[in-house]
Every structure is written in C-alpha cells, then in structure tokens.
Length: 240
Image (cartoon, rainbow, N blue to C red; front, side, top):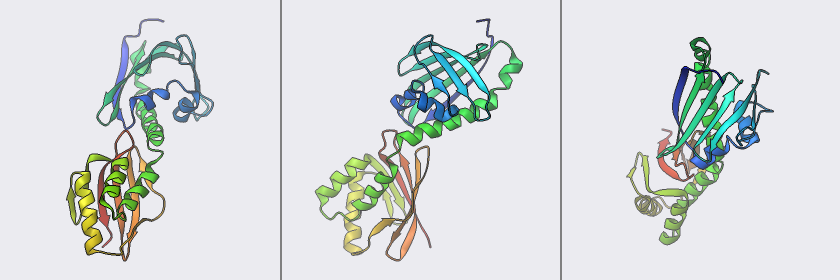
C-alpha cells in the first residue's frame, strides 16, 4: 500500500459491552446490519472485506490484522486503511476510528460518512445489547406489586444495578434498597393501585421510554440501561 499521510479520526462511546461490539466485526450478518444487505467480512488476516451500501455502491477490502476483542485493521477499497480500536468504558465501549488516505481531498469526503455510519453502528449494537429491555421494564413494573420484601429485593436485584436511581414527583432514591422500601410504602398508602405498561417501549441506544397506567394516573418512565442490560436509572413523568 502507498503512503497514507492523511487521516480522519473519530471516537464514540457505544452503549454495549466490548464483547458484543467486537462481534459486529467478525460476523457477516452483524456486519451487514450496519453497512448494507449482502455485505460480508472474513475477520482472519488476509480475509476479504466486502461492503455493499444501501445505494448499491460496492467496496472491496482485505483484513490486515486482528487483535480479538480490541482491534481490527483492514483496507477500504484497497486505497485506504481503517483501524478500529475498542476499549472498555463505564458506559459500554469506547470505539476509536482512524481512516488513513493518500490525499486530503479524498479524506474529507468521508468525514460525514463516518459520522453517519458510526451512528448506525451505535444503534444496531445497542439493539442487540438491549434486546430484553421490554422484559426488564415489565419486571420493573411487576416488582411494584410484590408484597414480600425478600422476594421484591430479589426481583429488583435481577433487573437493576444496586445503586439504581429513581426519580419522580414523589421519589428521590439512589439504591435498590430505597426503591424496595418506597414500593412497600406505596402499597400501604395506595392499596390496590396496579402499575402496568401501556403499549410497546421505545428504545434508542440504551434509553427506553415506556408509557404506563396506574389506576386513574398515567405517564411515561424513562429508563437508562447499563451496558450489561440492567436498569441504571428511572425517571417517572406523570401526565397531569
């Protein structure tokens, strides 16, 4: 390959674990999910990289090197080189992209393209990471009906981080123990009120919106999910 003195770089945080993120560089079905139907990748050194964009434009390349779980390097169109590095991050995975070119004019053509492509990537990886988000939301609402404290604590431990934060008009909580005690109080002072999800959730990159009803009340909860799929924060918004 000729000298590649010009490069663009971009760093983004993907709300999924490094293990999930890396699979999108080793599995052709996942690779195609963010490049275009029919795209394929062989993640062994010397393996073929094929991209078929949604508009029909095709790009061929070759895998140069692979460090499982952390780094892939491949040619893009045989005239430029892409290096993607993955590092664990508290919010998921920090992805660093470097795309090297022989001339600056060609490099500049790809700046917005990578903004768009990595945005798609963030969504398809998060969709896999949080495929069980609706079940987690339902389990959260169901926990509000559990009267046995030990059973309720166990249910919350399954779906939420220990230091979960919960905020609404009547709550300012920062632990699963606090949430459990709050539920017990609600059962005492609002007997018979059942919290139920209304309609399907809406999800984008680890943030989930779920509409709910509780007797005559209704509203929306905003859930922020941890990279491991557990609930990290909940904010309740009531319709008034």
